Length: 477
Ligand SMILES: Nc1ncnc2c1ncn2[C@@H]1O[C@H](COP(=O)(O)OP(=O)(O)OP(=O)(O)O)[C@@H](O)[C@H]1O
Ligand SMILES: [Mg+2]
Ligand SMILES: [Mg+2]
Image (cartoon, rainbow, N blue to C red):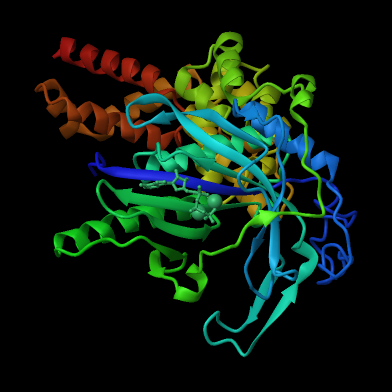
């Protein structure tokens, strides 16, 4: 798809994983707890309660600001964003408006034509509202329950400039951002709703459409792709794409126009009178950043000899990078290939994350491959066996055990020579075809030997053996 006229900018809301909420001491870890058990007068917004800024939240947000090369403002402050919604108990959200914590940064992505910086407009700190639980569907539910456990959870909103050129670039940006946040240890990427995106998109010369509150990266890519087609069709029909807010229906993969109520944009922002302006820019120098994805990628290339592509893949998530470093000692090259090219695909297919793969098993597998005990084909079979056992809730067998049980050790020289001669004797027609110069006949014969030994022969070696044996025959004739 050509995307020359596509303009995309993202607003990303990310939950910070501090122990307590943004303006009170309530614990943020309410995962398995009853609704409305992690609340107090502050996060319930009761009259007379006073917010106090959690220093840890500011520190976490500054870590992000520094990692994204932003400038932290000399002085920033909080504002009230007023709107009515049942999950917003105070009828205003404490957020930052014209003086956010930090602004003007950048994050490098692998764009459509090479690496490129995407500019960050600003990062601001705000509180999450509560959560509405609709009993029934959103439109026709009988009633709605509200859980305020989430009210007051610290969020940062990261706003990008409209620098992204395609849905794929938007997804790459989000992946890179997620990796960066993981490395910084400021958020829990596996927690539901930890990253929520508003995706803004326009075609050159048309109005900006904002698709609100998308909760997955695939969702962002899908919603944007849908919007490009929809907007092009509107223009083709001679109509105008109006500026509007839309919602993404994940299940159907479409966006729909929001009811006008929700578009009410007069938030009547004003400075939060209960909180003093903050002067925190001096802390920035003291903040030590861990190694970030780009640096780690360079190191993987230097230290382990990874290709650029492998290094990029393997540093794309903190746990993945750590997994690779844990297994690289066996053979860095084999471990990179087997992690990036085989393991990830098999995990993806089963909807597994990297944590499920026990490093000890993987190390055993790499060792078997390195010592030439098994073929690549058997390696894949072993990997699948292990993951299927895990999927079934069983304790996975060690690769060495699987090799013994299934007889996967590479067939020895004599055994394979015998099989080669047998296959030649059993297949006179393909043999004659080969001698008549028909190349594909050799592949057929290789396949037959592979079948006999159940994939335990090294394909390269087998090719040589077969050719030798066949050429000998021809010499005799
Ligand atoms: N012409 C455009 N096409 C696509 N995206 C755009 C365009 N102009 C601006 N944007 C993007 O829209 C977003 C604007 O976000 P911002 O938070 O500043 O304002 P908002 O969406 O109006 O307010 P709110 O935070 O209340 O949703 C940015 O990500 C910006 O890059
Ligand atoms: Mg915004
Ligand atoms: Mg917006």
